[in-house]
Image 1 (cartoon, rainbow, N blue to C red):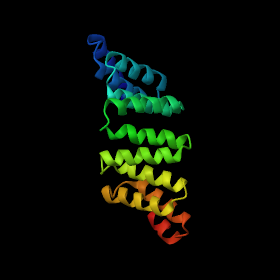
Image 2 (image 1 turned 45 degrees about the horizontal axis):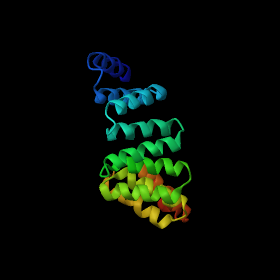
Image 3 (image 1 turned 30 degrees about the vertical axis):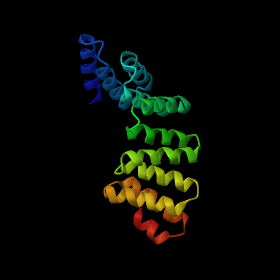
Length: 179
């Protein structure tokens, strides 16, 4: 019901036009509702109102990445990290953008930084595993996918990613089981 959320948030913005959290919420709803241009504008407005708004910088980076503006997204993630070095999500998201750019070694470092901050960050372990697999480091990839599954046994993508890495090593029975 993102349409309802968008409408209600816009009404609140009319009453409280200098509230950065409202623009951030609006941006998230717009992004989820496949309105990337408006989402980007909303996140930028939140940042204009509060330049040190780490979550808005991270969300802007996600919207830019989704829109294919990878270098700009990385810049947004770096702003979020500079503001709050203990915020794990922008490290993970930066890793995804770096992976998209085929800067796999840098992506690995970003995922590892996310995990240092949050040792239970399931998605970061699985994303690290994907990047390691793309580097041909399948044993390390397998270990990270298994860590993701240990943290969240219901994380379907980690099982699929594990299956891919196992298949690359010719462990087809295990790969099938994992898939």
